[in-house]
Length: 312
Image (cartoon, rainbow, N blue to C red; front, top):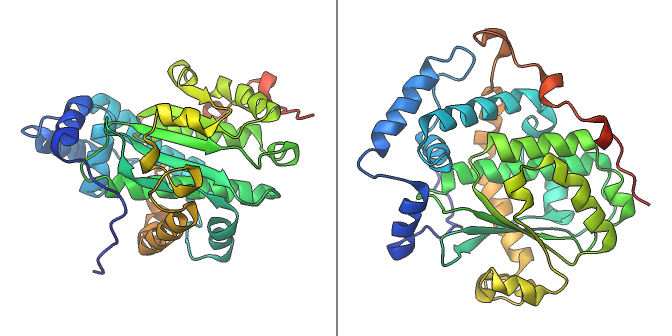
């Protein structure tokens, strides 16, 4: 098997110790917990019989080793794989559509380093202002594909995630193409189906219309996450939260350019191409779920208040 490139610095030393505490990880019992989750998975008729150890361990860490929370997350993860084909099917990174979006339309690379408190930083920005509806959906799909890669690549776990959203090119025409249903499905994926410990969201290069959009999205977010959203008028304000030197040169740092980081992650996604194709069928089968099958309409029901996003 071809060796994969290493893009993410793993926690070590004092950060590793601090991260173990943050994740509530006991290295003496974690193998037992992993075995318990694997045994539970084998007994669920509607879920895959087995899955790789690496992603399962990331789910345990993201659930602070609560077996019940981990089970809920895994069930929702495989459920969303079936319920959202727009995000979880046709995930060949070499396909022309996805390749074009990832190469020339959006950027969203996780940064290689970690903050002093062991958190991973991801910066997302658009580089093309006139995305069509399919390209917007593909952008969200690619974000979840990076999330899937990290299920395996975060071998030691991190103490949480920080997302920086650069809103420089977000304008009325682009925001108006965002479907509320698509936004809500994506938010459910992030909050309920992935083992993400979202610590902070920083929005930079903002504008009044972007701030209106943020207010539109907030009802889809858990209260604790709403409180972790910070809007910055100047890049310098970001340095209070993220060490400047670990940021890309585009934002005053020294960890390389956004273009270079994005190119590295393009290679990484292609390294997982076979995995993405094989995973196409790894999802929940509602016809075999004990009890009442998941009703997707109920799962994704959108309150009438948010059916229309009016951008003037």
